[in-house]
Picture 1: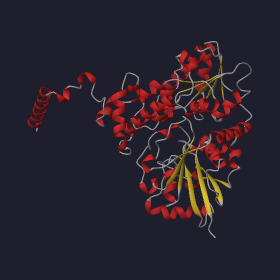
Picture 2: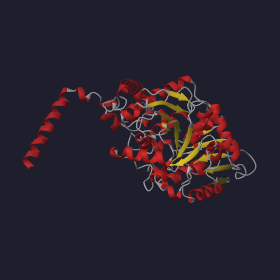
Picture 3: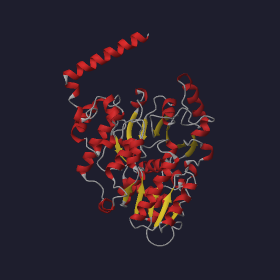
Picture 4: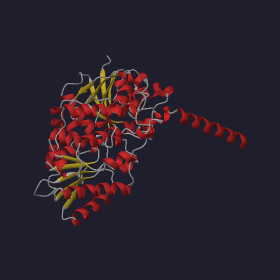
Length: 455
């Protein structure tokens, strides 16, 4: 008789750890089989390590009956760019059912980033399969990146997420009324502890002595957010800022696909400043590094790992470069805007020593202020997905736009959406001035007349 198979799709070790914690906490009902479907979404997956080759993966793999490869199933197509054509869905479903031994089983899916491939392709392939979405970072606090087909969105039963900012509720998928479900932090910490036990480093790599400052690299140039030279300068600023705060032992955790020369530049800069910097060679989770090193300070731009450091491990944190990235991030709808806004609004600037020293996790009032900001930003990012947020966005902008909060908005975007702040306060009288309107009408008429004469 047909049974039930749940397929869990993962692309990162952090996401796999989130799913493992959700399983341990009993958030998934029992099924006949659990299959872990691994997808490598890197630009060049052939030369980039997949999640199932990461240190500690074997500890997570024990929770599943089998591990499958999405890349192998759809080769030679790339997971990020391929999805089944509507007419081909029945053929592809038969193919993967045969390939994975699913038979006539009822399939349930647990995926991340449902609005894009490969998660969207998988949801389209198994038409009608119930969906759970899990969030592996701060993007869950922002709007769905693209308008989701109701045939997919209405099948989502839950959004599983970590409590990265306590008391802050996700905006993701709320257009379909999807309820958020917390993955218990104690279950997540237990899984991270297993990963740390399976990884022999990085305690020895940092060397003996005082607790180091940990610098987190993100490789923003690969996303087109910064240029290579600009990202080099961002990392160098992290080194200088950490040394200025008195840290003489630094550890740099590079992004797995970042150029090796960045580490050498940072080592040279640290030596020039009288400090010593070492780079972590093995691709491990930042949370594993926290357990092994217990850093005295964690510095990053807008990595989710900054919030896990502060919220799960109680480590001091500081941000660097968020102002520059906010100014450069385009288009306004870029989904990195929400993680960037959260980190910039909550965490202390590395260059403000007093703020770094005094910082602690925000209380209810501060989180409520952040929630109002994020709902205004969310509406400005995706007004067609969340039209009901217009009133909240208008009230927030009318009451809170000042020299600091302007960094989270763009005047052109506000103008396109007819939101408060689109017109500078000193010029706000102009649209209501009859004389100005007459001059504008006359100018438009003259322009039309000139255009007609040229023809």
